[in-house]
Image (cartoon, rainbow, N blue to C red; front, side, top):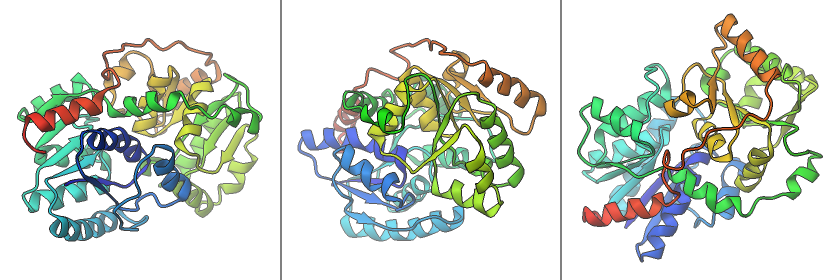
Length: 362
């Protein structure tokens, strides 16, 4: 029995090809959803569109502080692991759900497979950085999306069980690209390359009124329509800081309800550029061949910063913010240099299952 633990959008995307590959080879796997993302358009629709089986259990933990989410998930996941006794526990990325699952598994002496191991920002106060470091140090098999991640782990004396597998999100991107929802553009009255796509949810960008106001001003200067499928927490914080009306009145800022993955792929592929604070979306911008303005002064994807795909923004540095605002205003359809070997070939799921079989973990 293989147990996956997921809790948010990027994890559903990473789970899909791996679960399909397990089933293709005759293995039984179950999904435990912590409920960290509980909106239908941020959860259920991904299971439907990506062909993922419904979760074996949904913990319905919802939102809350880091301690609350991690603690509640830790308690409930330990109960489930004790009940079903999985052969391995598969965790994804760097969320609180991932940390809770890894801690539960290691305490029960269960092998942990960490998908997307090794990325580093070296910003130690960043919650995701803390999570990914802790999970990497207790995992059995570490599946790295790029070769820099392998090097990062080596610097921390983690070499056993480390593999460059490629990025499993690329598997899903290719799987879904053929099924773009092209009617989305006509429904939203959009033309290819004449809008920007934005996602906005990180703690650093929603914790204070000042930061949220600066982001709205930055978006307002973009010069083209900026579409933002609104994260529930971001909307809540805008309302709490009395900025919701300002957001709605920003002429080129178009708030959408959360969208499914197929619609998101369509919006990415047809946008002029992307603005986001999501590690997953910033990486997907490379798959889509689009420039990404990343709303933090650091990124886990060093190669994408170096090759110009990702431009980081420091909203606490007026000089940097002014430079990046001018870049957005003057941004055209910048061509992204692609390296097909950077994140693997799009067959990462097969590579991971081969590794697990060779290691006799399944």
